[in-house]
Image 1 (tube, rainbow, N blue to C red):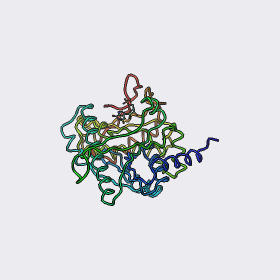
Image 2 (image 1 turned 60 degrees about the vertical axis):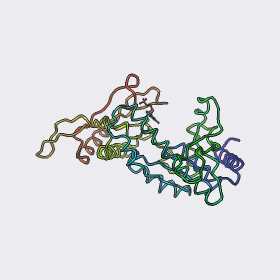
Image 3 (image 1 turned 180 degrees about the horizontal axis):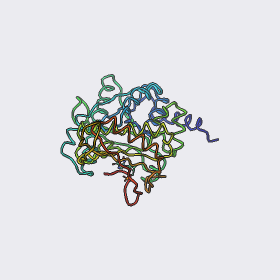
Image 4 (image 1 turned 135 degrees about the vertical axis):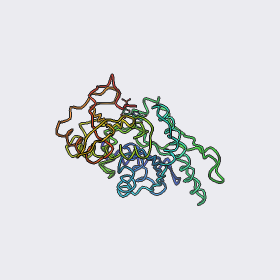
Amino acid sequence: TWTIGNVIHDQVEAVRAQVGEGRAVCGLSGGVDSSVAAALVQRAIGDRLTCVLVDHGLLREGEVEQVERDFVAATGVDLVVVDAADRFLAALSGVTDPEEKRKVIGREFIRVFEEAAAGVVADADAHGESVEFLVQGTLYPDVVESGGGSGTATIKSHHNVGGLPEDLEFALVEPLRTLFKDEVRRVGLELGVPEEIVWRQPFPGPGLGIRIIGEVTADRLAVLRRADAIAREELSAAGLDREVWQCPVVLLADVRSVGVQGDGRTYGHPVVLRPVSSEDAMTADWSRLPYDVLQRISTRITNEVREVNRVVLDVTSKPPGTIEWE
Ligand code: XMP
């Protein structure tokens, strides 16, 4: 019979059979799929799995800590966090075009992950062991979409670690290959993955980098991160997390408008709330959030985030508007 317990049992056995006495590495994004895949593989092979979280500085408030503290405490996963925020900021300096931002972030992400993975491989090497497996959170719909292929992945070691070949070959471990998203969530809950991670709304790989319209800077990120955290807090407090597909908060960093606060004139930036309901992100409708929730978000953001003096609501469906602004 099909039960979540059986799925976990079978996948744990399959991972053990595949990996044997070997070692594996896994990239964590803070999202559902990679977290659940890592938790499953950890259950199967324990400390012979090392996870790598690339902190590109474009994640939301508290997300790195959530993985570092709550996820690790819940699963016992061995985790390496790479703080690469400065490197991403430097690479993004002067970049304003949305596709260029994606390219820069994607390129840096791969390089940083490759360097970290090569470090894990070199570490094991120094202990006479080898890392031959790469864990990925591929789901059933991804398998179908990509034509079913699986197998190996090659990453570069960039010559930065002594004694390693330039190209590292890994066999893929994909314990979620037969599962749909809702099943992955149930597996995650059963494995004790924290609810905030299991129920996390979709969040783009380039993160807050594509929610700052204009150049990405440390100051702008700090402003957006706070505004975004407030919106999330209020949506959660109102019990709307699962009704809203996602709610990007977008900082119009190159736009300023006049405001008034206390007895002073302000000249600040607007943020846009983009709450949408959707089934699959292909189409979306703007969420009819209760006015009192919108009001609390607006009041708190303009009170608590000095640089923001206006909160505006995006009431465009997709199509014609995409969910993200960039
Ligand atoms: P759009 O803006 O195209 O977004 O309506 C559809 C869904 O995709 C997410 N999104 C991305 N996810 N990298 C990602 O991993 C990206 O570059 C990216 N751009 C958009 C978006 O958050 C929404 O869920």
